[in-house]
Amino acid sequence: MSLASSTWWRAGVHADRRPFLLARNRITKAFRAWFEGQGFEEVEAAALQVSPGNEAHLHAFATQALTIAGEASPLYLHTSPEFACKKLLAAGEEKIFSLSKVWRNRERGPLHHPEFTMLEWYRTAAPYQTLMDDCATLLALAAETAGTQRFDFRGMTCDPFAAPERLSVAEAFARHAGVDLLASVAADGSTDREALAAQARAAGIRVAEDDGWADIFSRIIVEKVEPRLGEGRATILCEYPISEAALARPKDADPRVAERFELYACGVELANAFGELTDPVEQRRRFLIEMDEKARIYGERYPIDEDFLEALAHMPPASGSALGFDRLVLLAIGARRIEDVVWTPVAG
Image (cartoon, rainbow, N blue to C red; front, side, top):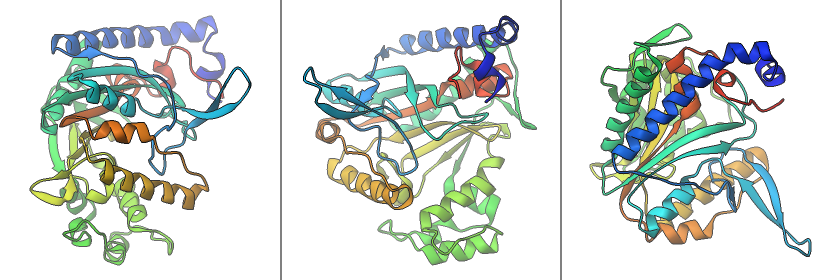
């Protein structure tokens, strides 16, 4: 248990943390003002959902709803407001943002907290490159509001006012790991586990016998690529292989990759963005693959939100991004742990 989570309410501890918390409030206000100035509507997504999300390695907090007669039905605290926000797009909203509390289980550390704040925003009829520009603007706005000229974390520095580098995942694998990633991805998006495994071993990456292509991909990202991103200036890591697309649509020019990007500064992942998939059949297929993988690894699976898939068929073309607000605040104000920028840390 960290000092912040166990004794944050003590006057001395709170006095040390309070400047960080007040800076967080200023950044919150600045972000709201920016989105409103861009014509966005702020929305509030219900935290209780029938599905918390369908990614294999995300873990939710489960609860239940009781009728007056005491009959129970399962519910989950959402891991993201994404499903609810996309339903609002299907309902007719065009530019929305949400500053939502979200919950993720099995996550705690300097950059992880079981309850944290997610900033999500969506633009209909906008290419996902527009969200890259949004991310650059928000980095600069956070730094300007906090009164800092650079981010400094774990020995890395980043100029939040410099234009972010745009780097494809394939380029990053070649540069930082010496791996030809797309050599293991076929034209139809299928993957060659053995081809990637051989390259990973040559790069000094441990490969277990039961590792799938996705496991090897993730290990290369974590060990070789992420620690090198966002040095000097932010990095936008884009064009993920289609098997790692999550809820993103394929890229027209190369269907082997998806319209997905992640934003990094000082080696810290800050945002995950998609040119949004609106094909409910394909989305269901991906969800089922993810839940099969979750069942294989963790022995559990989450339900699929059928209402979300129905809404997806009515959703207009859009792009959306999810940004870890607490992490960005941490970098902007020079904190070292996420609990330093959370008003009331979760006990434990």
